[in-house]
Amino acid sequence: MTPIPTLHDVYRAHARIKPMILQTPLATSTDLAEKTGARAVHLKLECLQNTGAFKVRGAANKVLSLSDEEKKRGVVTFSTGNHGKAVAYVAGKIGIKAVVCLSEHVASYRVEMIKALGAEVSLKGQSQDEAEKNYQQLMASRGLVPVVPFDDPLIIAGQGTIALEILAKLPDTDILLIQLSGGGLLSGIAMAAKSINPGIHIVGVSLEQSPAMLESLKAGRPVAVEEKDSLADSLLGGIGFDNRYTLSLVEKFTDEHLLISEEEIKDGMFYIFDKHRGIVEGAAAVGVGALLNQKINVKGKKVVTLLSGSNINSDEYIGIIQNRLNKDRKQ
Image 1 (cartoon, rainbow, N blue to C red):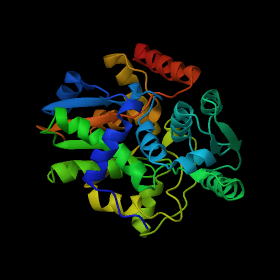
Image 2: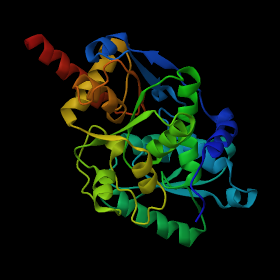
Image 3: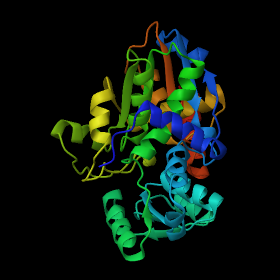
Image 4: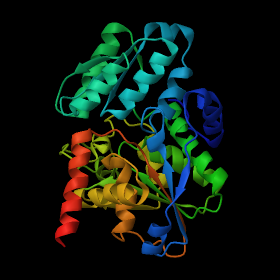
């Protein structure tokens, strides 16, 4: 088993992926600070990233670290969408084959985005766990190199580069609110942030609909959770039955856990549109939704939350915003 990633690995990742990513900006949300009593609230705009989501960081770190022989064989992954898109993007940039395994539960617009980047898509099963079984079969039968979505030290270190960018600009950050699904994002950011500042408070935000990591933490082992439809579809999926890294890292570095509802996700999405003119997917809005609904005490604190991505179907997004506007007009 490869050693768990360290802060040094995150710095190495930052240097490796620099040509492939954007160093995304931090936006100040004065209104949100006033609403919550926070000293300051900042939004890390990974929704502006090259692939429309943070996932390109981990994917780039993994794929760019492969040997020439491994690159010739091509890569395979499984995903709920954003990781698959990131792998397809990086593979396309360096001219290698990519196969992305998705379940039939993945939204069609995400499937089309991945195909548009030149990757081969294999659709099978009704959950990420079933897509993972398909991925394992293809990896074995075709000799493809695996690029897992989250449970890999190189993926974790790549996502951790977000912490370096945040703390370089805002070294006195008190609280980080981070999306939690498979745990690669939270593991990387939390490990890096606490290595730099052990006193920083790490909050994981999970879906009420499908909190696979939380249920696994309670059980002390990976458990399967039914995938239900959610606006934050990129946070769906299990943590893998052979989880070797993220379960223990999330347990070690997370100080607090929050659960977010579908209505609270809508609150966050509409707020980001209304106050910041930003378009984000459901998963990106969970931190803002938690703050708006007073799910955490941030009074007097400097807070950063991540707007993790912007990959959402246009019709779905417009419908959410229009419904909220209509609701506000009736009140």
